[in-house]
Image: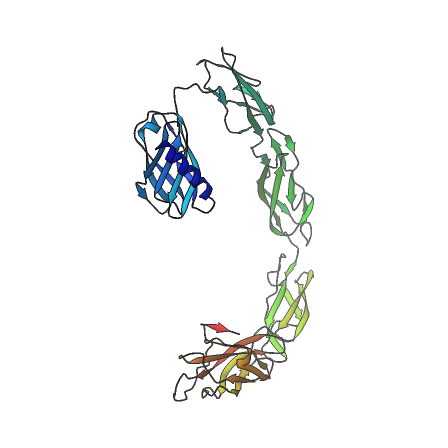
Length: 469
């Protein structure tokens, strides 16, 4: 049997180039004398016979089970009891896959001395000096069960900021040696401490507010005192009212601390005028629009200061940008001025009131049939919006030969279908006003698959597109 199996293995080796493929053997190794075993062989196009070859001999066994990923096969007891590396082939009608391997290991055999070390260690610093770091290394194997381990920086040492490589050596009485390295990184992980004012309240020095100075400091356990950046910065002019000051301090490790406080500038007798930043109004007609706005004044002992604007609120504003100038005066003779822009623009697209096609049903004759699109569009500003055809598509596959644009609102369509179902052409129309605001709609033209009555086609835009040119 031995001679026959060896000959078969030699022949199978030559066939593996065109056979299936073994991707994984699970388990890849077992302990000797561990009892009855089954193994899984994963791969593609695997056959139904497994061939083993090694110190225990050669074996040809049928598989025990098959799954989508591979096969399961019995591992003979004589192989389990005989330590060696065994070669595996899988034979089938398509040829032989392999080789693959399984190791039978004698657990009583002496293992070489090795030193197991932990993954890289990262610890936050506890002071400017660094941090106390503890770690474990594990000697394994060798002829002496009590090896000695020495490291350049023992576990529990003070490690400085930054990265340190610890060299460790394990030795035993048999003269065996194993080396390993431990990577230790001590980093600055704490945020700086910000010290900011709780709240500042000052009196206005004039209509523009007041110049305000304040103190903001920061301290970091690693880097010491740090600069603080605030917006607005100390020494800025703060407007009347409440302003939030945002501050940040960043250490050398890019840890940032954020904080904020408020500065309230109180008005004590300065007349102030409050105008809008900018007013945007929609045109109500081709000439412009009536625009309303609010302007107020306060700060003096006169509860009702007089306010005049040019143009006044509620005036008619023409297209474009108009600057409005406002002046407030109290009964004590104080005055304040302000200005802002009013912009009247047309941002409303035309409204398509009616959209239809004539004809809206084509008799199937395979000819290009002219179709006129009728559009009624109105616009508040532009009395004559411009409308045109922008696209043609269909629920039925079409080509460039099936339609032709004749003019802005006329198209020629092929009166045919590609199958038994009705063809529906969708003609997209876009209407624009003089401000280039646009709105769209679509007309539907039907080509019946058989003899049908002509019907009115809805002009509501379709949401479902099966085919498009």
